[in-house]
Length: 256
Image (cartoon, rainbow, N blue to C red; front, side, top):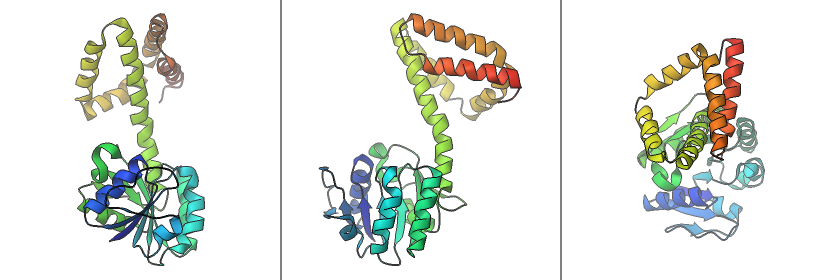
């Protein structure tokens, strides 16, 4: 398949390299001084990159999604699949999809569920929109778990943002906890505690959901004490303070 990758940064460059290594004919474009991935034909402008390709994979900052779609999608062949991998808000992705549809091209909203620099083209994906099946076919063949979800452009992105609330939130909470544990001289112990809890999987999630409401008042006091302790260690405590406030709200309302 002939594929254009717009944006050859950390994620785009890895995708372009993996696609080329898998035998696809890959054209790449990036306005910055990034290296050209092996096997990729570098183009001097995006219109040149998308000419005569079967699919366009967009991996630019999300603020460029709509304008890039408006300026460049009409320059691609009518049968092209325009797949946007950027971390845009659902409304932005829906707008980009509408622009591509108005140009008579097929759009796919692609949400990346992992670290592309680590797992490359095997990184899990969620895809929605008219071009979702084509994207799924390409990346499933490369070893990625690719799930097509119901809904148009924006549906996949909406799901991954909900996932980010948990995953990115947990990442920041873990960072705050480990930073404080390091200051207290017990980092190794806390790492083990967190790792053991993660192994509990959905059992732990259910306990989170039920226990948070049932014990919100007691836990709010516990988290206030935790935040005070972190302050005494001269460690950041934003997430602990926010957790205490959330517990107080839940205790007052009786619901999460």
